[in-house]
Length: 231
Image (cartoon, rainbow, N blue to C red; front, side, top):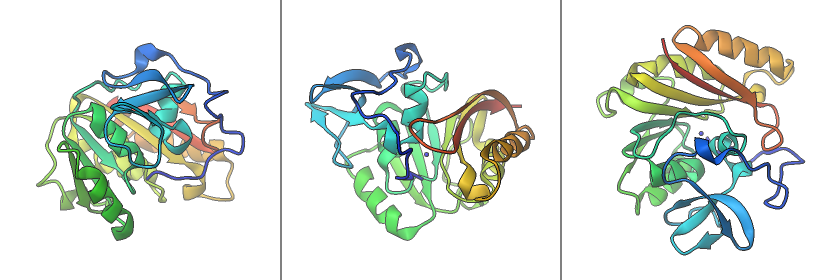
């Protein structure tokens, strides 16, 4: 999900994190005590200075929209070993955790600078495939990305976020899942966030059945997480 470092002013620290329903966590994601604090964690090489304990590294939900969905107990439908298309990979904060528990993970990022960082993140992860492409133009990577994928995870900080999800629905299996973060300020900095979210969900309805929607406070201000499946 791009990994936007902006978070709520009252985003919880490890001491006051909400702690979601562990039954919704994919295989390969666990809640562990690292550095004396309880946190989500995956097994893999550290990426962004996160605390570690042996092979396990903390997953900071205040730096990851997908991590926040897990902390809030959303039923994402993600599973260990899933084949994933990740849209808006940025420098790799969240997609590195996804590649730790998933199968082949195609990471689309448009900006060259974060893509260089993403390449370094992918170096020790043989299941992570960075693509310097524009998520608004899936035809430019359709020849590389598998069809019938298990999941699309999206965190693109650009106007038309729902349009991006609709255009990429072609890659999902009939029983696949979309897990998308919608950032209100990327659509309209002056509009009421709820109005922005309603418009985005309506647009998603052109290609998806929305299963769950939830705001990501207190981890991320003015963000909505949406879980959906193809129509």
